[in-house]
Length: 120
Image (cartoon, rainbow, N blue to C red; front, side, top):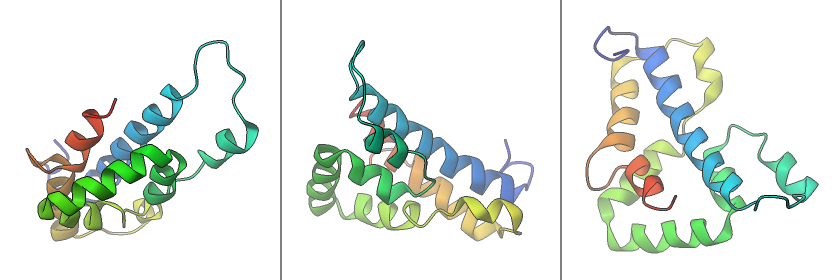
């Protein structure tokens, strides 16, 4: 809806935030019910850096690396998505950047969100 209404900054921010929430959901699922999670692991999740979040789950990061070798489009899409910057919500984001992030995130077959959803 934000893209349709030409609200580029909001579209950019919310797209990246959706990826961040998906990654944090994957990380949270690594903590089993009634477990007491490692404090450093929990504190490390309090970032808005998508690459750092991916790397917190070593198996997820390794799987992404392997799948990017097999799928050049996923590799290109990850290169776009990993550069998402939550501080741009205070800036003016241009249409091209907002659309590129959304496309890299949502494209069927090689989108980063589709890849993450496959790992939940």
